[in-house]
Image 1 (tube, protein in one colour):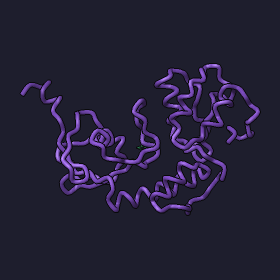
Image 2 (spheres, rainbow, N blue to C red):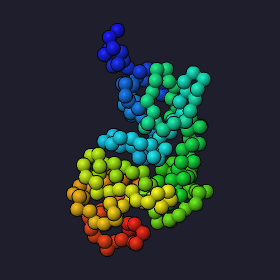
Image 3 (cartoon, helix red, strand yellow):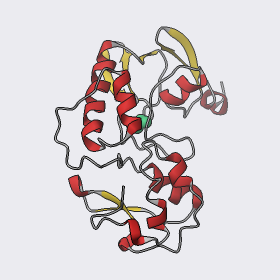
Image 4 (cartoon, protein in one colour):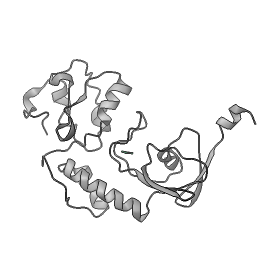
Length: 211
Ligand code: FES
């Protein structure tokens, strides 16, 4: 077998007991989607590189005696891998993730609805800002950089103070108003922020962006 042929060999694995094949380079999430197997996601978009910030897409993988819980948008399958998208372990981790997300962006209707699907209606984690809708997943920043090719958005500060901003917190003429950031936002947080990015400061709250 030539090296070229070996490289293009499909990878055989199972997802939820179903035999499927992955192209070399595909992630578990891409393989599942190709086979119409649902895995919930928030920070994934096929137009940009995945970086695994939300952890909602976790799946359970087993390979021989080894098993782990891992984000499916980052992990590439290997031959004979067993993947479980909806096991008790997976559901348990997703519930924890959703509780954390509810604390992170408690005002997001999308997150509340998603959490409710897993029976989560409240959170044990500390809520810093009850009006927060932004998950800080970075999808809007990535789309602005990688797809639109401008740098109208960035993240400022770190840790719990991390927030979405324009570079140097000033209106940014690089923004072409394409709305890509708004359309990919998984929590609906950006609808009110577009005006701010383009220079309308009337909605600015003083600690970042208006909600
Ligand atoms: S979709 Fe995989 S970590 Fe967010």
